Length: 290
Image 1 (cartoon, one colour):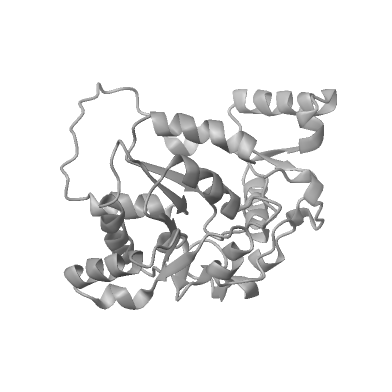
Image 2 (spheres, rainbow, N blue to C red; image 1 turned 120 degrees about the vertical axis):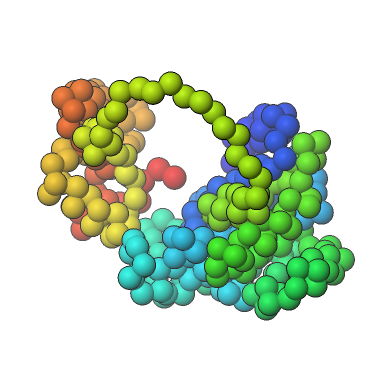
């Protein structure tokens, strides 16, 4: 993992960005041997020296919430599914490669890194902005290597974004780990900045609903399975790809890729999925590439 990550992170640092975000799934599925988020932090800390590594996994818009370090996720897409603690989630707790059997993100991450992890909990968000920032500075006096943020709402994300901005500059980028909640936090705290107006020449109008889509799915989630089933019932063509064979440039798999390209050229939307994923009723983790 370090062999792959280190060169990439060094190149990102040279870009001069104020923030470098290592995106992880908002369900935090990982382990000490597969997709280790803790190992990422160990490698990144040597490249991006900073007082702490922010860890924000909550993404309220996606139905992902962290409360007192415990992580919760909505089951399904939209706002109607029930919310479950990770270790009791019907899908995430049964992930075929990295099942989440621990909802406390600190305990889960502690199996992947020896770094000290502190929690900035949900109660701090009831404080005034001055007290909020003072509480965070007090937390940093304990010298945690990682700070996990609770969050339930978009407002919480905005306040977190304001904190992160205090510790970032182009010479010393702040390396953070988390879901898309990181981008939501930073964008929200900057919403008062007037956007730059860019004039564009008018082009031909095209209906997005009529454009062909190319969808690649490697998920074993039953939610994804339902989405694929819906797509197939509504005009999508399916091309099933065996990922190990594809990586080995097997002729049959390359032919399937050719069929996908031809289908899109005929303006027919399609979805691609690996063989034997969970939505087909079988779970073969060897077919799933992280």
